Image 1: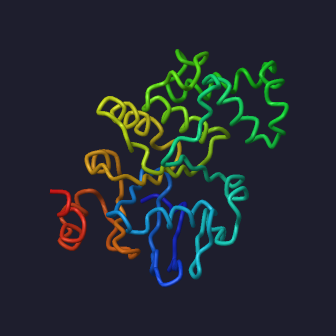
Image 2: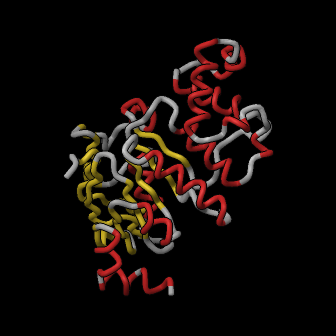
Length: 249
């Protein structure tokens, strides 16, 4: 059993009368692909926003590598090794794949965006771009505008940009959204290739993807933690089947 890299303890978050997360507790083990699932309105996005530092919980604790990061802002969490790819792609379509990656590297290094194009001439930056693009299998597309990429390739580029700086923990927020079968296969393969190199929290609606990729699965329903277990344990859990998986059939 691997050591927990992330521990979530008794998280509560309210928006007025709406209880978005209620007493949520679970841990994510180092090197795992850990899926977070639940029906629409389950509180997944609210939980992820608390983990990434976009919002703070009303009560509870978030530990990352045994450090209490509950009140750390997003940039401090990024410095510790937490990265996030978003449900809607955050890339610049008019820039090339290489230029998008250069921006990500420039930002990670804390440099001013106004001078990022100058950095493209740096041998070190060129080497870093090549490594980052190769990691997500986009080397053949490096000189093309991001607008030329398929939806699946844009997701790969965004994952590559999130992986700049070699984070230890990657939050992937519904990466398969809007994908065709081909894009889903390509991104699933990429996630498998990242397995063990980075711990992944995968927020996903596609149950075939979840059960084929995840080491562990956590289920949220109406803001509450219903279950955490292996894919086989989650499939067999009667409460999960009635509360969520049964709705899929």
